[in-house]
Structures are given as C-alpha cells and as structure tokens.
Picture 1 (cartoon, one colour):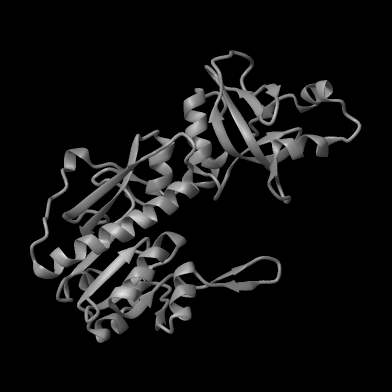
Picture 2 (cartoon, one colour):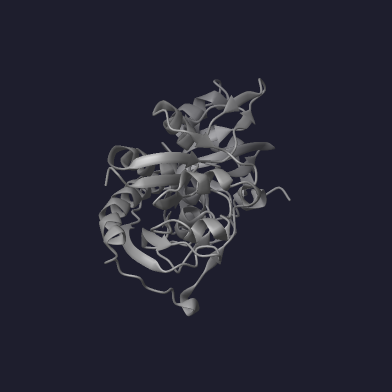
Length: 318
C-alpha cells in the first residue's frame, strides 16, 4: 500500500497510533488537524498530538479554523482516500466523495451506538460491557455512514478513560490496516446502520464533571472512571475542590450519602446504596496524590482516628 495517497484528518492522542502506521505503510500527503492552542500563564503555543507526529515526519500540516470554508488544498492534493480519526470538525460533503476510495472514519464506538463526540466517555459512564471500533464510510450526517468492519474489547474493572482510549486507539489502528486491503480491492463489506438502534451523544459539559453521590455506587464509579484522568470528576471537601481518580466499587454499607466512612489506603465514600473506594485525589491547583500521601498532608499533628472526623463529607456545591 506504499503507493496509496492518503490525506489524514485527526487531532488527539487517540489518532496518533493510526497515523503512525499510515506513515509506515502508505504515502501520507497531508495531515489536517485542529488549530494550535495557547495554554498556561505564559501563553505557550501547544500543538495537537497529531501535528507533533506530522512535523516529526516532515509531513505538510493544514489547520483550518473552519474546514467547511477552507478545504481546497485537500482537493488539490488529489488523494486516493481520506482517512479520519477524531478530527473534531464536521467535514464538508464535497470531501467525502471526490477521491477514488472516498472517505472512511475510525470511530471509537460500536455503531450505531454512540454517534457523536466523547463516545468512549459515554460508553464507560453507561457501564457498557464492551467498547469497540467501527470503520465506516463517511456520510453527510455525523457518523451515519455504512459500516465496513467492527472489533470490540471488554471493559474491565480497572479500566478508565485513559486505559480504554489507549486500547481503542491500538484496536482502531489494527482494524484499519486489516480493513484497508478490502476497501482498495472493492471487496469490503458494507452494512447500513439500523436507525432503531442509533444513540446520539453530546460532548461533555463542565457541569457534568461534578460528582453526585446521591446516585447508586455503580453509577458514581462509572462516572468517575469515565472522566479519569481528563477532564476529571470532582467534588468539594471542606470548601475545597478535589478531583477523584483511581476508583473502585466498595461495599454495600449504608450511611449518609457522601460521607467518608472508612480510611485505609483509600477513602471509602457512601453513595445511595453502597460505597466507592477512591485511591487517588487532587486538590485544585496541586498535583495528584495517593490517599496514603494525602492524609499526612492534611495536618501533621493529626492522629489517624481524628482524620476521619476532620474529613467529614464530600459536598455538592450548587
């Protein structure tokens, strides 16, 4: 496939292993990614992970603010195929059908479920047993195109967004490379999505990051790990904002909702009908800490049995 001319469109770290393999095995003419961002107090310019890889490999990069208004360069490159993976903008219809093999997308869900942004987060939040990848033809409607291939992996107890993002990225890379030969030969499968099975999801909103301990323990556990580590779910303790990470389902103990009922190398927190155990915490503006390191930082003069009284409850600030 080294002669296959590809325009690749992607932005976050999910897309990096996919682009790496395409660089190795095809002729990547152009990489399209989101514009650079300015971050931090020093206004440092930050490249997307995909741009960093493209620059490292001396591949031309195109970063339109609005691709629907500025895409002529892609047509001028005359690629054989356009391949996308978490690009982040709606792609103009003209780009979907002009190339020899059209445009295909590496989507991080088992379509037709979880069309739209943040499919990994939402699938974990909803407690899905399996997550997966769909290789699909692109259509003018978002994630609506015919499916070519799918592959799934199990969501394990210790998994969170970070681990599944990495696993699905590798799965997507491998499935794409296994699927491309049939696309190029015209022998690939092509299955329409069943509209009755479609679920459409929205991007995460800031207000969704606040933990609601009034929900059952399984729901709270899934919510926290769906946001671990970025952007991170949070709650308030003694008027301070803390993000909670590395969470497990605890026991079936019943107590006042949001109350910290036990401390070991974790904080055990009461939910509606059970508990969760939190092993890592991060106070706003500070670094992550294990609970082992966090407890002594509260007050060096405290003896352990008084720490529980001091911690009290996580509160939901409205």
